[in-house]
Structure formats: C-alpha cells, structure tokens
Length: 253
Image (tube, helix red, strand yellow):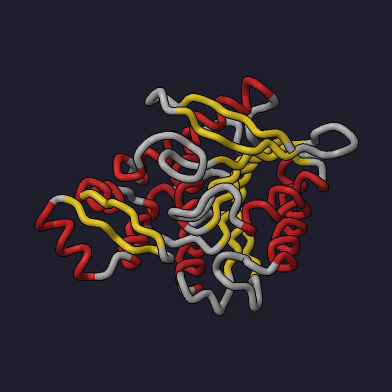
C-alpha cells in the first residue's frame, strides 16, 4: 500500500491509498468511493480494497474533499463535488497506473459511482454496496428539525454518527437535483448490486430499485447478516472475493 496525494479541479489536495498486489502484475484497476461522511480508512473500505489487491487489482481509495486527511471544508461540498473528486481521482489513476475499469461505491458512494460512470469511458463494470437508489436519500439522516433549520437559516450543524457537520442549503438542493433513475437506464456497464437484508441505514428496497432500473448485464448478491458499514472483516472480505470473481468476467483478466 502506498499513500498518495493529488490535486482536484478546485486546487484542493486529496489524500488516498493505492493498494496493489504484493506479487505479480496489476491485472485491472479499480476506484473505490466511500460512504457519506466516512473516509477511506473505514473498515469496509480497507478490507475490500486490500482483498481486491490480493486478487490482482490495483485499487485507489481516497478521502473526499473535507473528510479524513483531505483538504477543504466539508460544508463547501455536495454530491456533485463528490462526482468531480471521483473523476479527478480517475485521472490520477490514468496518469500513474491505468484508467479504472471497475468502479466500487459503498453507501452514498454507490450512488456516486452510478452517477459518475457516464464520465469515465474506461469503466466497464460498476459495483454498489449498500447504496441508496436516490442521492437525496442521505437527507433522511439529518432529521426534519435539521432540514427545517437549514431551509430557514441557510445552514445548520448536523450530528451524524457522533460527529458534527456543517450542512448548507445548496447541499440539499444539489442532492435533490440528481436523477439516478435515468442514469441507471443509460448506464451501459455491467452492474453488481450488493446489499444486506438487515441493513438498518438503507433498506434493501433501495437495492431492488437499483437492480430493477438497470439493464443487463446485472447481478444481485445478498450480504446476508452484514451491517451497513461492513464492520465485520469477514463480511468485507466476502464482498471483495465476490467482486473480484464477478468482475473478472467483464474485465477480461
């Protein structure tokens, strides 16, 4: 594993980790998008990218603007800026290793890779893990009182997973502006949808809507008793092995 830094289009330095096989060549490259307000070092991200590296992948995971070790103010970000960060990360991969042929997104990161895929011609396969079927589903985490305050004041501090984040009104407007349903119909990539039936953050109904909205080739895999964050290393490792086996059919390695 190597730590890398790249500059996004806004001139902000983003920090990531590039996982590569310890032995043998890189067979394919992948880009990983983490969950909302999480970061590149959450267990699910670490375990999946490291397991994929053992399967011959070169995988980049990074902190979106304003999160983890990346620079920038989270309050200035949006779903759209996450897509820009992903496209810039893909550009770094293209320059330093190879353009990503596989896109993987966890939770809101799953919605992000579905949305950004049309910008990345190198991507031949997309994987979502515990993803919502709409970008604005994340707003449910804020609660009605916080949403009302954001509308009235223009911004508010929202508590998410024990941490405070400054959310602005334009974040809400931007999340509601993205039409994932149309993007799914036009995805034109192989799609693997992974979701746990006991996910308490996002109902498996989201996975069903994503799967139903996409064209073939598409596959669905239940993550059985896994929680939303794949906090059990065995669950994350299982997901990675399935991703590697499934994607090999479409990435031709």
